[in-house]
Length: 401
Ligand code: HEM
Image (cartoon, rainbow, N blue to C red; front, side):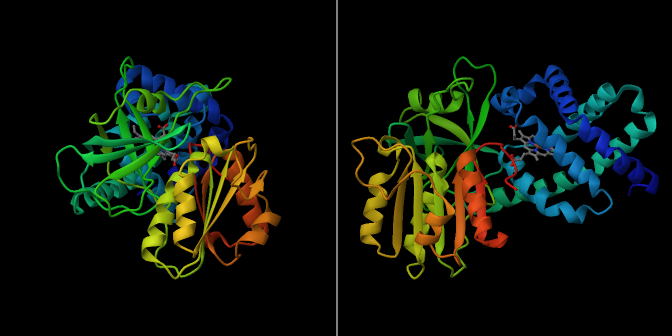
């Protein structure tokens, strides 16, 4: 229980910390990685370089601090972040380290303005927030381990099949190397790969959505090779998977996680909208809907650059032929002369959506940043209520609103 004084100090200093947000987080990570280089095995170093992720953690601490006397108000956010943490194997013993370096960074950046009282109050507040996370995550680890076919941390899987889906996307079918059972998952969830890439001096964790319906004797991920453009470097893990991992190879993954999944109880029509490799969780949703809910209209809309990078093209065609309640729509922004089978050239916009799908549907969308912003804006303008707008970003871009 925090004293009134502590709460007051914490709340009144949030604006100062937020103002120096970037300086503090940069300092925090630099010092923490210098003293605990093993944490580089956990944090995404590519995001660190690009300066994207660093802000998310500290901002979440400030947001939590705002509600330090009523943490119940931010429990939904804690649940969400904890889901990711569980999938990344964040453990209780990591929290004091993060706390120590966050305080150290605050002290260093604020200098004399960071009085002992302020540092002490923040130390206490961080402790309360960390406790909430640790408690939620403890339950999540237990759930992951106790379900049928489940496991707690990482488990080795063998690549059973490797299948090229397009010029840039390749699928990997994974089966437990121990020959044991698979845990169930919800369509839309992801796994984390712990990649030990030759030549790299730490492991790389990456999340990939499961791209097939649950209920098979494998997990399938479908990975886009990130070749790198301009200032964006090539993807370390995606290149490794595409060029070095072959059938029979083994790597470790954590149990399925994530809160972006198809609500199979709802009876509304379903509209699945994907951009590029964002189609992977929606493929899983589409396949699940086909199996389970043959009385529910399904719209599967996919935007890609053109046909050569369009994965699962045949799958989509086949599906709409076999299952008349699945309506597929393909949009290319730069079709080439080989492309004939598409419904629209350009980008998704509100007018097109209004002419194509029902407003009273459950919407699920996933894709790169520009695509997400456009779809999000269109659906809001169309007054689709927030509880029927479900989305997941690929990468740490953050908020759409
Ligand atoms: C991601 C908050 C503690 C490791 C995140 C994200 C937030 C967050 C908001 C982004 C979630 C997303 O992208 O969906 C917090 C808060 C913490 C905390 C408020 C303390 C109270 C920790 C600790 C560790 C950790 C102790 C482990 C050392 C990570 C990692 C990611 C992440 C590895 C993924 C992004 C990346 O690789 O850079 N956290 N976190 N976090 N967190 Fe935490």
